[in-house]
Image 1: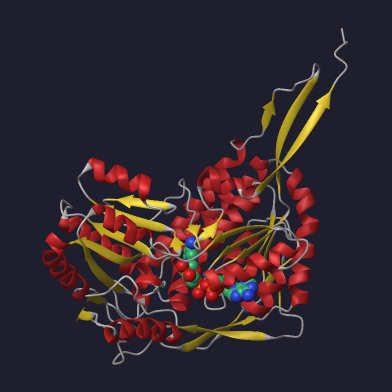
Image 2: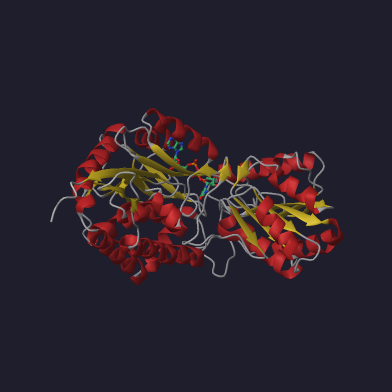
Length: 484
Ligand code: NAD
């Protein structure tokens, strides 16, 4: 197939980069080039931020319910034709077509959900210490929001930034991942069709160190809403610090899944496998390290291996009924393999998988289960974005809580038990932003997705997520009090 040339979306126009620079986009299932997108220079980024700044003043004065109408139209357009966009997400990112379709529909739900906040978000009136005075806290937009995205759920994560930003009266400049930028540019076409005023929604494409850095460090950006790795998030925070811009960082995870001896084993195995193979293990909330009670370890791992061996993977545009597509690129395959081989070298045993699927075209890793791992191995400590499950046994609840919490990341966690006392202790003692009890890891749009420690600062979704896009303005209003 020939590659398609795309343009960025700045100030309501589809444009090339300043000097025509561009970058290539690949299909990870075939490793073939599918598209060429502009590589935005700092001056292109500046153009987008200037346009956003200019447009935002009028947008903030537009009633929230009118802003929300645009969002609702975008959601309707997505729902009316989810398949074309799903195909693009699959082609550039590699997830199965059914998951890509779910992502498009979830994106529509998310945008609609955020639109519904238009009549609901509120300021406050506070009691004054003085006679004839009122204190008002207004909730006002931060101005221009920079949304920097990863590639794993590219369309949904873009909506997670643009929808709350727009409904609260901000303008946004999106910088999608260099690995999956096309869906944002296709989305820009929908934004354009529904007539969102020019400059309110912009997309600049390019790499992290140039385009992303120019956006994160721009002095007119009021909030940098970043989703990605701890390493890039930490640099973005430093850049934003220069301008004392706000940051909301949604970073990596290393989610423990704890299986107690009273757990429903079928449920635990099923949920853990689902939580690991979704998007080929490339989700921040994936179950990444399993702690199972020693009394049930044998039965649990036997069932787990059986399920992992049933996982079907391949090229999602060529085969139907797959559980997984490819990983995002060859570097990802290599990085996973290094951690698996390191664990084996240090004494871990592979029960299934354990290698790149070299016999296949594209970037695939075999669904893998390892036992005899130890807490100090990188495989139990560093984020692994792939279908790999290391399993470690434990004896007591105190011990497993300590093992679970012994982690630089603090995004999600899960536990399988029927014991209320254990479940309540887990709620109170697991040091993570999110805990799933007796279910797979996946957050809802009305919740609050926020990591502890190196998993981030701030958060997304629900009313708390919306607040990230607002700043307070307190007004002390005195009046004479003599009118009659
Ligand atoms: P990444 O950090 O490599 O890239 C993310 C984005 O940051 C890209 O757009 C990239 O171009 C940009 N970037 C990179 N360096 C930059 C710099 N110096 N300045 C400005 N921008 C820069 O991450 P990735 O590989 O795309 O995504 C995977 C990571 O994202 C994983 O760690 C995953 O856990 C995390 N993630 C977190 C969540 C969450 O909600 N917590 C959700 C999805 C993904």
